[in-house]
Image 1: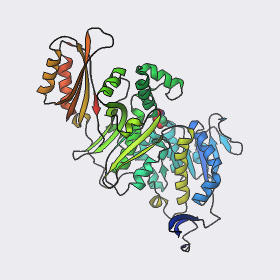
Image 2: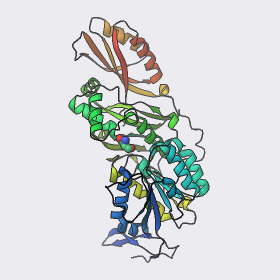
Image 3: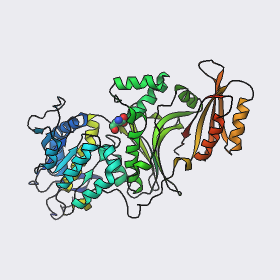
Image 4: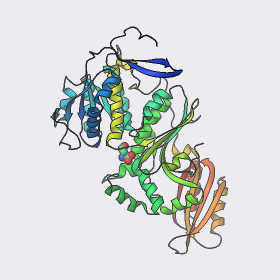
Length: 469
Ligand code: HSE
């Protein structure tokens, strides 16, 4: 067994030891007198209570793994939460008490939203505190300024919990895949939306009915806009893309479309064509620029992402060296999200005595690389994708010919075609096409012409198709 290396400043170290031809990892903790790290939690809702529980339950293990004890010294909460025990912890109703508390080393922001949270995080940074947050809206929309402020103060702002709950996907991009040029990533990153699409498929039920069920089960909020219109997923995609491509955070340039217009007919027709509809966040580095888009997508039924059902999340990453790797797990929930929060706390705890905590961190607060400030993002009209198209039209002779004539005139190739009487049996039919890859701007023009045809009576919709190969 190798001897421990020379003392480098009272920090825990890991050595590889060889025993019976197997490599084993042995943790030598030196410096038993490391000062504890003191944590203040702001927000005692679902994630806040989970964080308190995990910190308390796994305190000994965390101490052993980080080399210091992690002490919860203050909680800011509007009301007590019976899901956790705060008996020995100072509780305040004002989150800014935590940001100003000289005892606190790390402020854990779990209040959500952008207004008070931004002020809180800024105050914590100004007071020299590291910050851990699960707030995707805050990071996606204000991260560029927050990281700059944190850099100037020499503190860390860590945000693993802001994307895909328990799945350590920010770490995967930042650390495990750091040697790769990321070509693209695609993820199911909104559990509520995935639950709704899964149920619509299983029960052949309309969107509104399943949304109500999701609300009753507590998955969807009373105002479900963020989840069902894709905004939540766009926040998460913004963060993933910045980490994948080394760019700044570009929420405003992310194309966002939700699932509210998907019908059980679309799901059924897609199935007949061998596809499944999933709501995906897609970030793609192309020669023309970066694509950032969140929208319902047809993917082959045989693809692994098609098996990700219910509220689960999954992210598929394509790197030039690793090829494709896929990450799966709960994207929300009390302890699953707390798992990511606590991982960030542990990272900071390990680095607290480093001479330059920022350069030592494994989760750098600034995600962008030099020279990536003027990155080009593609508008949705400029992406090239295959599409599923549904056209509701009169069920009489010659309609299909008129539709396909417009498609052909725009240089669009049809890969597959279905024509079905409507469920309502009202003399209408759904014409369903799968097109070859085409620039979206061209497809939209063709669909506008089709929508104007006399025989077309209902909506003309399209859903992008991705093979993710
Ligand atoms: N509302 C999110 C979802 C969970 O449904 O995935 C928190 O990010």
